[in-house]
Amino acid sequence: MDITLADLVTLVGGTLLNGSPSQAITGFASLKEAFPGDLSFFHDPRYLDRLAKTKAGTVLVPVDFRECPPHVACIAVADPSRSFELIVETYGFQPAAFAPGIHETAVIDPTATLDRSRVSIGPNAVIEAGAKIGNEVEIGAGSFVGRNAVIGAGSKLHANVTVQAECKLGERVILHSGAVIGADGFGYEFDQGRHRKVRQAGIVQIDNDVEIGAGTTIDRARFGRTWIGEGTKIDNLVQIGHNVVVGKHCIIVACVAIAGSAIIGDYVVIAAQAGIAGHVTVGSQATLAGRSGVTRDLPGGKTYFGFPAIPAAEEKRRIASVSRLPQLMARVKELERQLAAMKPAVNNL
Image 1 (cartoon, rainbow, N blue to C red):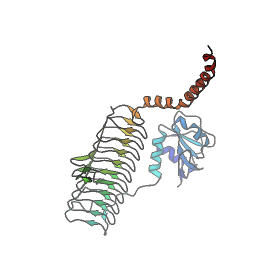
Image 2 (spheres, rainbow, N blue to C red; image 1 turned 135 degrees about the vertical axis):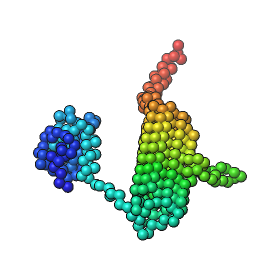
Image 3 (cartoon, rainbow, N blue to C red; image 1 turned 90 degrees about the horizontal axis):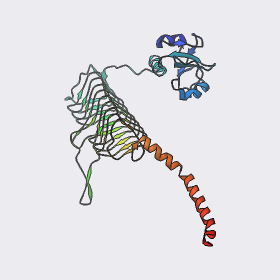
Image 4 (cartoon, rainbow, N blue to C red; image 1 turned 180 degrees about the vertical axis):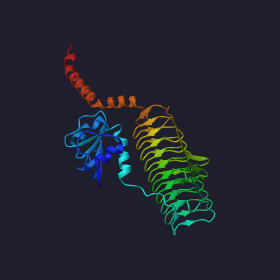
């Protein structure tokens, strides 16, 4: 890598505040993890101490920032985070470009619909009968597309992805390795001393521009559909149960679990390890903090926290009250001691 600060300034339309235009960068890193020669960025005043201590050779800073450490070359830009992203996209690791072709070990049923000149199918992938594969679709090594499944144009299935029978993916959907779409929902009824399996006869529908992380599982519906709305982004290791409906442009972070038939509105943010009970509704534009537990319907437009999840301000007050309990207990014990000391005098009255 041989990229000068002059190159960076030209690319991002920035201003070099200090340092030499001929100085080169050798890598990309956060302020905390950077080594000499690395490029980093600063955009949040909370990390001023990290900027002061960083070993990075060059840092992108906001246009109105003038407190650059003397050992760091600073480039002023309108949006340091976005400019850093642009530089990494330009000079950093590049994903392989789409290259049509079908590996000789791929197994494709003759009744599947696809244009072989406009898809990429990797080694040992399996496409079953009746599947429909759009143009510019990439299906990675070892992936499985079940009977009558639909994969929309421009979608990408990384290695070892499973899309079960009848499920429908829109356009430009990205499924990362290990994702399973359309496994049976967890449905059983207790009958005559046994757990009887309830047939899961529905599908999973994933709309356009959804991205789903590695190891995430989305169960097929008992009937009808489990539905993920347009533009929603789902992290790794998320479990979504049968007949769940997730709205448009939601963010669901790692290790979230959503039980069957829950309804999530549009633009909802669900932080890591939150759990949502079945048959509840979370309103649009709500935010659930990490490890929240949703046990009842929650109106949209608010931030929730705790178990059971309540408005964040209420939960913070509750936590503050709990943190004062040791002091309150100490005061009670002291009052009890004082009362016990007064008791003989009171008895003599």
